[in-house]
Length: 267
Length: 123
Image (cartoon, rainbow over all chains, first blue to last red):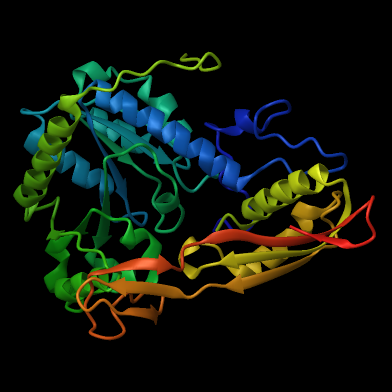
């Protein structure tokens, strides 16, 4: 996938690598221009900046991760149907190409910002930050960040989110946490999606999936959901509402005001 | 994943250290890499010559020491070494453990040759 591609250079952060920028290398004859440690430090700094934006506006930010096709967008559509009357929702969605997912979300009357990552296989904090300026956070309660479908790279990049929700769809097999430990170790909630297909598959065992998550020393809850028939949706939306309340209780005590650094521009 | 980027980060750090000590060449770079860092050692080795090309780091030998996944059990207090996808206590099999090592990606030590001194400088 990323092999040696330097895929952490994205539209959002490439300015950091240009000549004269903080991460550029100027050694004679060197073609090296990219620095992961520096990039992750820059990413972590930007993630913190995003977190301050969320805190200022008392917004809950949820990072949704999964394989491609596990049902992230369908889950969001069902979630908007169930919670859209009570909470103001917005979606930031990353894909390599197309506006398809953002268009699906917008049909439900919810603002959606599509990030086309080109060849990058994950979202980073800079890309999310750019997208945030397309949203009026004052008018939003919950922001979903639908990450690029990928069980490897997205787990390594902090976006400023308050929680990671990882989907594992039943056709993928219940041993995915064993195969992708870094991703499933990072999950605050695991949604076993497409639960309507579980009886037909016959070999997907939710208890086995849970056992594999525990084997990663992760105590995150697992919820079986089906966006199609609504199974488990109330447990999922209940979890979300509690996360929002918790976030507001924490953030309400001392809302963080942040000042942009001089070099920082919002366009 | 991101192995080329990791190598470039290593080269950048080593170049800074080398410049501060007026080193003319670097002979050895020692790393410690854990299986939960998300970095694969064979890919790291393949990517390193490309990241080092054209710098004083070019030609340096890259030594990668794998670190074990070690966990501490909050139930029985034992420290055990376990596989990266099975962080259960090696003693009592409980899952409530915390990671002690196994996710690191560290530049451990470099050996360089300095212009003013004939001896190797150990950093």
